[in-house]
Image (cartoon, rainbow, N blue to C red; front, side, top):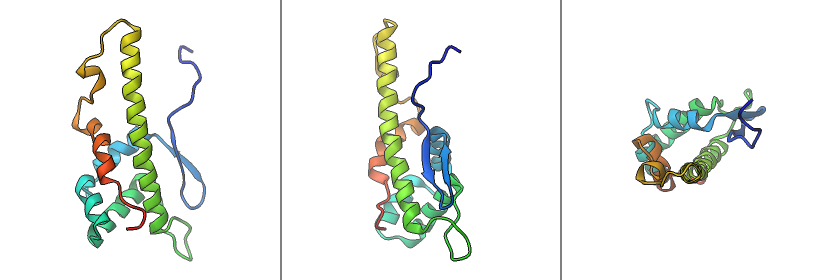
Length: 142
């Protein structure tokens, strides 16, 4: 196999029952494409105390991670646990995106290509969102 074994960038989390893993890029795209939650706006509004925005963020997180709401008859995550999970995921993606930008730059240098804006900057609005994620991360105390 041409690909050497190395650390894989897989996001791991607990769903209230068991440990799970998810491809972070797929989850990131799912989060930003959610039909009910406008991430950039709803994260800020939820953080400011908007209950409806909070509910949309929570519902998006449950869909994205496939996590059920905790109750005395059903295992799952509480709202606070889900908020922490979403926050951890956003922070994980910010680090992953920075790491990927460094990898592209190092690759370009290794093959003798001078890195330019196209190799060091995101090429789409979706991949530019990690830079914005620092400002839209929900606080765990909402």
